[in-house]
Length: 65
Image (cartoon, rainbow, N blue to C red; front, side, top):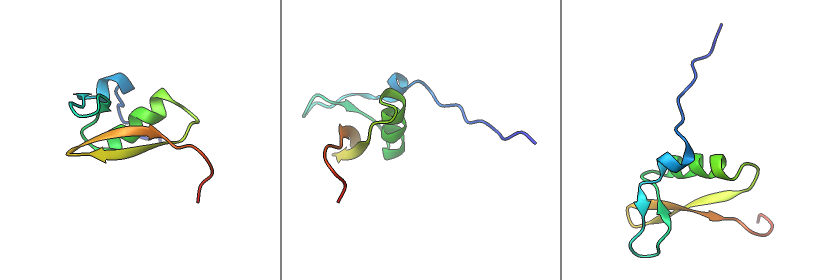
């Protein structure tokens, strides 16, 4: 039996625009930010962070706690 595949747009298409406060790329939801981070930086741990009503991604450096 085949599984249904979900269409995932290119990570560049998930970004809504630039944040007027800090100039970073913004995403509508946390899920879209995580999906874009996985697509742009495979194998590297990035974390979605909130900024107002939008989300950004940031690189996680160092050891996990």
